[in-house]
Length: 62
Image 1 (cartoon, rainbow, N blue to C red):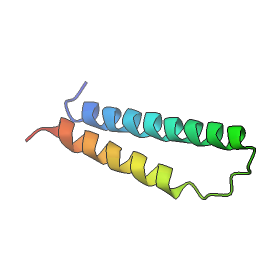
Image 2 (image 1 turned 135 degrees about the vertical axis):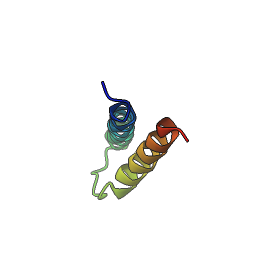
Image 3 (image 1 turned 45 degrees about the horizontal axis):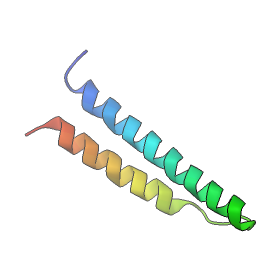
């Protein structure tokens, strides 16, 4: 596998794991509180994207 593919795969896994984890926590919160979830979830996307960019840059090396 080419060296540049691994950081991209790590970033994709970090994004997916973070986003799904945050959404699961949010789903549990609304389920426990018995409130509808009307939020647009932009915070989950943004946080997951920032962590993915960090993972990508961190794994690219210098």
